[in-house]
Length: 81
Image (cartoon, rainbow, N blue to C red; front, side, top):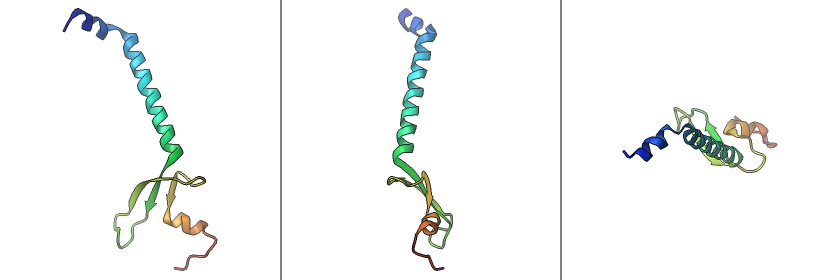
């Protein structure tokens, strides 16, 4: 390690600046993820005994968390069981 590397490691503003950019990047990624993607859950059924969750591309107007049961309950056509 050179003396220049040691001086860079002791510089607290460089570390704070690096952490700031990581936080800005993570916040930007999370904002874009929330704007375009959503979580779709499937309740446990015979084919999927443990249920499942999928990350999906959302259409406009869809909630972030969605499920087949929620789609059926919002449908104007009645769902018969």
